[in-house]
View 1 (cartoon, rainbow, N blue to C red):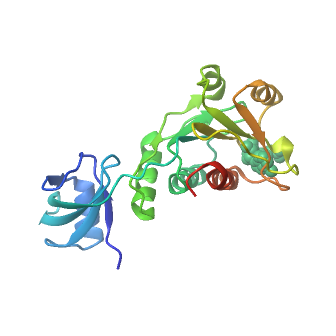
View 2: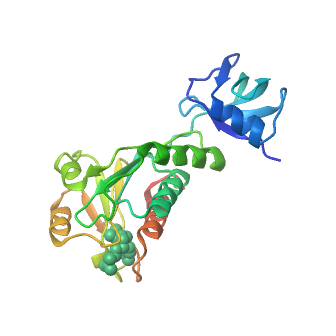
Length: 237
Ligand code: SAH
């Protein structure tokens, strides 16, 4: 069986000792039934992945001894995902998939037709961590707080291209080209983009309007499709 992978907040190096939080101890010893002496893999999001041995296993905590580095950090391309949050379970799905597909930063944005005014950032960040643990990633994308799209665009970095997934282009050929990263992908809400948002985005020099094929996709599907398209043409696939 593949070794269990655990993300830890502490910066890792061989020979270190890491204290486990209550939640980590519950997961390793209560749920996964690991005992002292068991070997797992740990990563910190900065220094790669390391072998680790369980040195102490308790109900409320425990300790790991860190061994050799097993893999270097593999950071994704400098790609942001901007998406308008939808229903809770589908928003969780978007964050999980974005982490698996190799987004470097996840930015929930409020557009004119966004259905949801609030997100729970910490819960979404925890989904990104779980996805990285499960998919063999050594990097955790940061999940940002909800921000208004118009404010983000007003301050948009000159060098960062924006792959604007525009449902009005449905049926057009999915043409994406441009320089390598930095890039961002923008996916709208269930209601799509407003006329003024669309006009503003088309007028942006950094924006490249893209079709995702002949069918209108749900926002969560569109996220995965756009990430696959970008990664295969300009990213690390
Ligand atoms: N209600 C809208 C569709 C919104 S789909 C309508 O009927 O027109 C949600 C988001 O997914 C869109 O804002 C867009 O970013 C993306 N999307 C879905 N299908 C797409 C397609 N075929 N081409 C480009 N973007 C698409």
